[in-house]
Length: 111
Image (tube, rainbow, N blue to C red):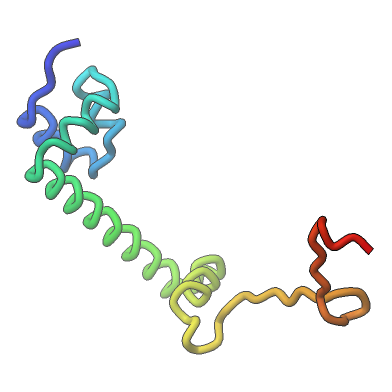
């Protein structure tokens, strides 16, 4: 394997949207090599974080479009994750036998 430089990694961060495995494939090296190079450089860390934030922005935009198009899965997901303050939460109630209180017993609590 050839030696990977910061410049090599830098030129692949944006086109791969910060996907470290894709950067490694493009450079013909291992993911670990790329990850170690990024961890040793604050500048590469910042570029990677920015690329990943951009990808997150893109995903949010796609979700918003799906919500506005009335896609049920997107509306449901959005309300579950962003509408908690308005009561859109999934909740499970766990009870004991016949709806009674839940009784917890520890192994040392033998009767």
